[in-house]
Amino acid sequence: MISIEKTGHLITVAIIGEFTLDDFKQFEDQVLYEFHFNGEANLLLDWRDMVSYTVDVAWEEIKFMREHGSQINRVAVVTDNQWQIWSLWVSNLFTDAEVVVFSDYDEAKAWVMA
Image (tube, rainbow, N blue to C red; front, side, top):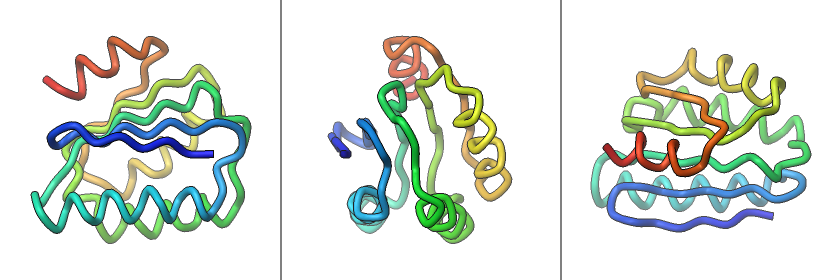
């Protein structure tokens, strides 16, 4: 399940349980909408309650970042999961955005909004 909130140029995304392709499409639509009207965005990804993600999500994420990664300024990710951190490293190869991993949600939000 996915929860998406928008505040200014910040898009906050929380994943609960499995991150599915339908969830990713919702995320993609919201971010593309922000790009259309504002040209860029910051992302706060809360993955503390994400259990897993499907292979098709990983592939779509890589394709999305290759195509739109230059329009993302900052990405703050909240997680302690080492596999998620590793997947971020791979995704980071396709973007110019600053990507930082946090274990504390409030610190992540403060950084991404600065």
